[in-house]
Length: 304
Image (cartoon, rainbow, N blue to C red; front, top):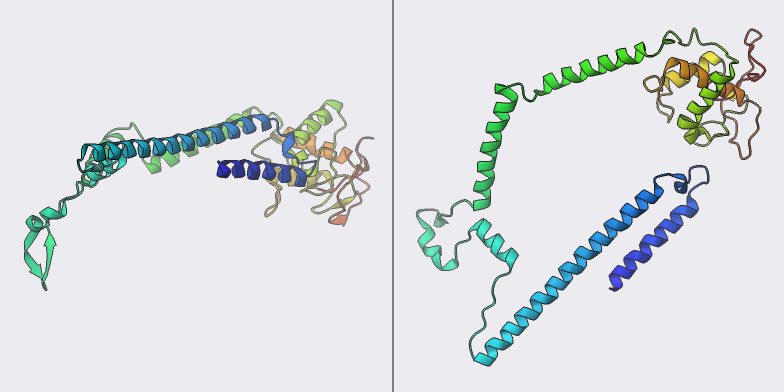
């Protein structure tokens, strides 16, 4: 019982310390699935405790039965012979051990330098496993080689490539603005496009750059300093291809070119918002060229 109490104390102390050290921006308590995880965790703990208690009670019951049998044998004046446990019987039957009394019958006639061997047979569990592999090999040969029920590794690889190609074609077909790239991306002022970019930013970018763009794992997006260039083309390029060796992944395979253009333009609207507790500037100061003009909402670029 003391061990169980200690286990609960350690569990709750760990959760408390974890909650205190977690930052507010990335707190675990903001996870919508938190209650589900907590319930699953406690159910798992309860199941483990029930199993442990059941095993302990079984051990106590077994001890009491043995003790009662031993006392009964003493009262009757007969010798007490302890019966093997259930697991001991399973272990003995699966190995089919021969008693030491029969060792002389198992000795083989020949010897090697005075060393004689026992004519032991293979344990039953080994033979069962061997028979199972023979049966498995028959099914494997039938399914993979005699029929097309299951594909071989090379065929499976080709199927995956074909599926990926089909999905890529569907993605391109569903994106009428697929021609948007670093050379054709434009500064936009449409409120609906910027609102769509904000949604994309909150769903995909806020976890690293914060909802207000002040920077967390990723750089601050509200100042004039950039690590990889500050034009709309530079932002689109980073969003599309990512930055190798950093947490900035390539979003090209996850969102459409139109959404990448919208979120790139939304990032520009964060310039000068000056949020609280923003991250220090990183990279080099960027000033837009005279030809880089945008809407009133897109004045100067922020860092990415």
